[in-house]
Length: 281
Picture 1: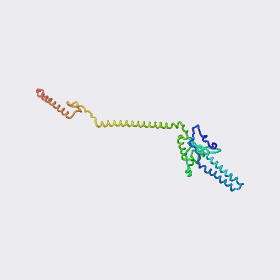
Picture 2: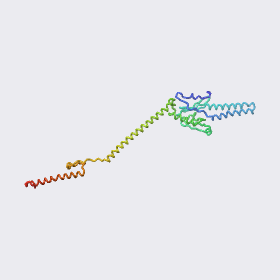
Picture 3: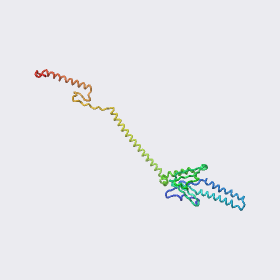
Picture 4: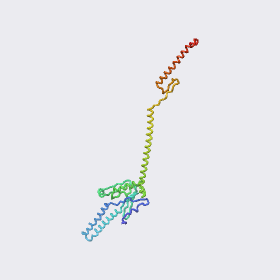
């Protein structure tokens, strides 16, 4: 029945890539009272059996009114749609005169879900939107089927929008998304590995420098340097400077003593042979 269809696709901004994420119909529980109203027309017609013929028109028109009014209410529920797109949420309702209430995704501040006791049994609830402008047309959406799933859908749309209401990625971008994510992960892994290698090389160079520094310090402690002792000009023959030992010094002293004895004897002989006039005073 195209006459009683709101034609949601007519309200989409197709040029900007707007697509329908979810189209929410009223839960069947919203039609219970309308159906009971239409059913009440049947017992009203039974009044014809007890009323006089002059009053037949009363139950007849009353039952007709109940049927038409109930059917109108059911048709109103059918024409009332709540639509979630990648850019906004909007509500289309009305039979003869149609009304549209729109709220961009970026202006949704909070979503409250109210589920009465009977709604928890039959899985329906009511949405209460808190927005920056408090659009009254979208303040409350009643009789939403599967409200938890619909609430999560709106939250996912908000998260995927990124810039709060940006256009949805194209089909080509969605197909290339896994490959792009894999490339980014590989690049991050390579960068992390390069950083780890650089850190390991720096640590190895530092350890090598520490080991070489410790080795030099240990060598200096084990082998202290000895400064050479300069050889005196009057050192006796055979003296080897700082290489000489005690035994060599004793031998040098003995050799010096033996060389001094002939010199002293020679001096005595020379004194004995000197003439008397050269005797020392």
